[in-house]
Image (tube, rainbow, N blue to C red; front, side, top):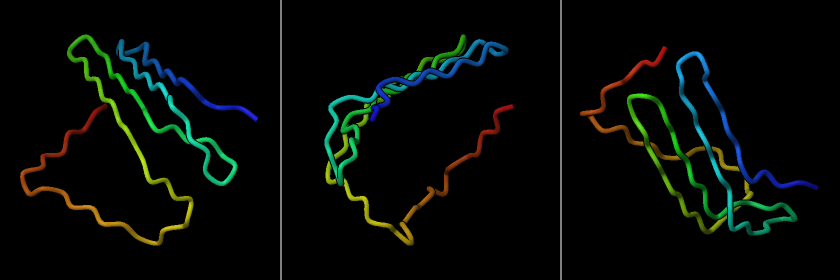
Length: 79
């Protein structure tokens, strides 16, 4: 049995990197899930850091979920 604690993806062509760290695990149905995820997205132009805290896990199958995209949303296409 193993637990993923860190994930790093490097785009050497464009000098970009994404890192994700998974911490504070909780067990649900005999599987460990992180309750905290820290993400960093780094490039020569920008650095973005996010920290997510989650609770109330469920492993039940879901058939649908609600998602609303604001009218002012502008799509950005990354090559």
